[in-house]
Amino acid sequence: MQKTKIAPSLLAADFGNLQRDVEMVNNSVADWHHIDVMDGVFVPNISYGMPVIKAIQKHTTKPLDVHLMIVDPDRYIGTFAELGAAIITVHYEACSHLHRTIQAIKAAGMKAGVALNPHTNINLLEDIISDIDLVLIMSVNPGFGGQSFIENTYEKIKTLKELIQRKNASALIEIDGGVSTENARKLIDAGADVLVAGSFVFKSENPLQTISELKSVADGI
Ligand code: DX5
Ligand code: ZN
Image 1 (cartoon, rainbow, N blue to C red):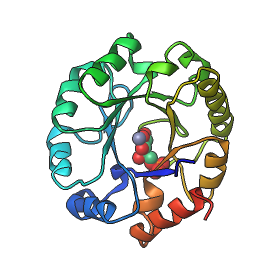
Image 2: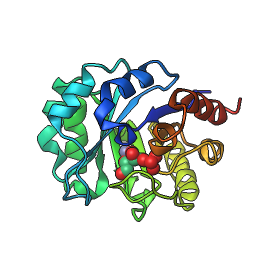
Image 3: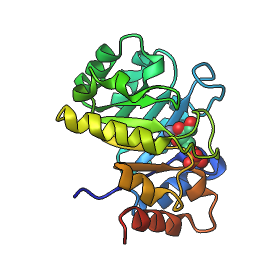
């Protein structure tokens, strides 16, 4: 069985010490760097833009998992490809022509993910699941770190897992929002493959150790 992937979200890092926090993730057992991009339109908040992401990227040693919470994400696919992003995840709710967007991400040499807000039904992915490399289920409303986990997420993971199996698809299931060692095991048991964690990692006393704990709990060790 594939091991659980852990993707610390840099949104919760100390922006005055980004290099230090990126290097902490490099030195940890984490698998990916999760980069949250917000435009103040699709979500109420603005996070960071290309100059900051370019600066971050200079120090990263693990794949960049880019989560775009922006309208019309097609505009930036080329830019993220140049930056060396491994995965681009766009929001279902932000794309009028999702199939075209996914093909464009893949054509640019990256993995394509689709994120769903808490209110968006899993079955809307039925006709596109086989084209997707990853589905990100939002377990909080997007826009901010540090929010409470929404319990309905477990049901959504199970429904998605069934859909993936029924369609013989291979998309990974990523969970984003309110993830901690409290719910990690239950999320993995429901079918999650990748756990994003922001506040739980970066607001802890020892982020390096917290990442290890999260990985151990998720892997059932
Ligand atoms: C929220 C972002 C998340 C966020 C998670 O819109 O997509 O990646 O950083 O933060 P926590 O883990 O604090 O809920
Ligand atoms: Zn995210």
